[in-house]
Length: 112
Image 1 (spheres, rainbow, N blue to C red):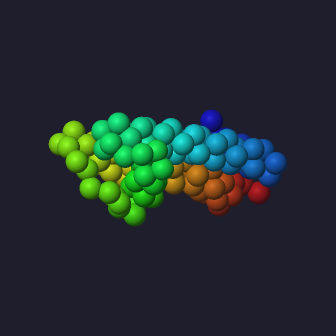
Image 2 (cartoon, one colour):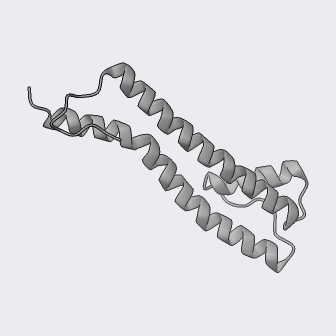
Image 3 (cartoon, rainbow, N blue to C red):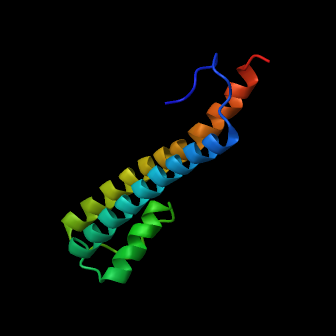
């Protein structure tokens, strides 16, 4: 996927394309996660669509829940979704940061 340190540093245009691909993957991961969260809050939390979207967005960004959950199933979903969201955040940051970190390290180790 990435060039070896014995290979030349990737040209800037190709690097930008790589960064865009990683950004697209990160955005897709966040969009799918937001959709799952919205649906879960809608069905299990018995919230309307806007409130379900707001709760999913708030949890996904680490801000915290807004509405109390009425059932045990909704509370379990909210708890698991919060744990999942923490992992999604780390993965998204890793996806966005990997090409940049690789380029910096490659430049530091490149010969010539």
